[in-house]
Length: 407
Image 1 (cartoon, one colour):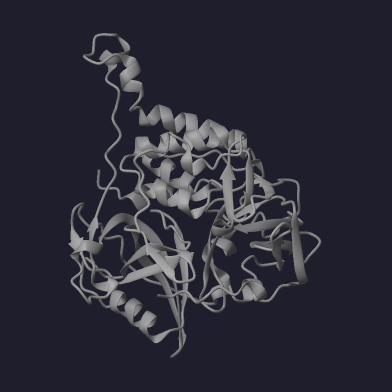
Image 2 (cartoon, helix red, strand yellow):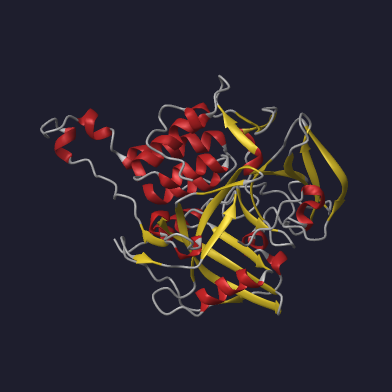
């Protein structure tokens, strides 16, 4: 696998024919922060650098692509397990590949015949303890869109999430490697339109029954809730499927919750759970000691793709984080450093939980006085959890049903 063991001591320096991705991407492009229009321009307003992952250096855009695999198609794409990374259709995934076996996987994808050219399979990996590794069986295809070869020992790529897939672990024979497991392309059930007869009271099912499956009504409710929670993030636009994936990527949720949202079999079920989460979500807490570290209402866009995303450090470890205006009950270690910063013009400092010293993420401070905001926080999704007002973990909310943690 691509990731190296996490060592938090060095922070960023170490650390119809439309597809799911097309629709999610369209929504993501409309999600930039409104910012302060009177402020002097800086990286907070000119957000292209963060989207393009300029810290990777010069990368070449690859022509073509955009191939859509048929639903139900069985394939054997190069398998990339990433710890704590849940890739959604439309998400951007940067990778810095050092190990020879990992480079071989990416080179195999680049040279694969059509329709599999430049496609990889990304699945989330979790650790329950130092000796136990669990691989989720629902993941996402990713299309390599940019690449640079720095030397024989380094390969940088930027990929884009495309379509959901199911990893068939039962297809493995005794002694076979996980990379030999077959994958099946899956798709969400298309949203149901409420017939005009339902509103007139002459349909077979009453309107209250149809409303339970109204993806468009749920999308409107979800948009209203998100705008109330994050008013400085520009209003979302897009169809219900695009919105459901955008919310799964941009809500301040831990990786386990996002995995369950990815596994939701329908757009209606995904949106229902996202609405339930937003209705009750108030605080973000340290995942290990439950100390409150942030408010869910402080989410902030520092990229034109939304309120967070995946970033790769100089050693190839991928971090998925959410960006916020402020954080509490944290302690920072070391002096701010601009080298290897993911956000041009900002210096990073490692941030720990004041309660248990868990590595929460980083504080970013402007290295120049004209940049807006002057500071912000990036919290790692695997380090936080979202709770409702009663202090119950939202993973166990009864609305989230039928979503399985598959190891």
